[in-house]
View 1 (tube, rainbow, N blue to C red):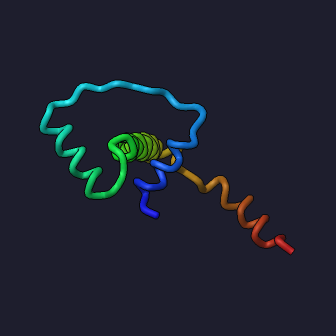
View 2: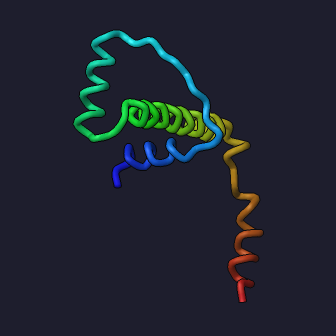
View 3: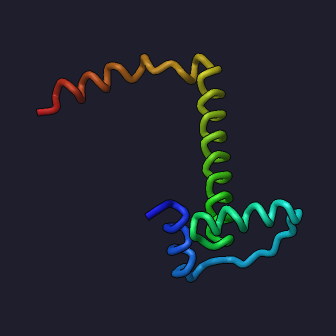
Length: 94
């Protein structure tokens, strides 16, 4: 089962969902309709897949940016203080 089919299946059984209306240029609508038709899924499933990809990309970017900021502060990035504790756990793992 493809990702789009999974999204479509999930959407049909979802109790907690929100309905939205969007306005798109005619060309975008026609292209979306054609792609959905070729994949054998609904436009709704295709739009959900796109929105999910955007949300996932944004979450990854936020996480990356957070770790980048953490790495810029050398005091915060210093993990030497944890070596003794890690060695104790590793060596006494009987």
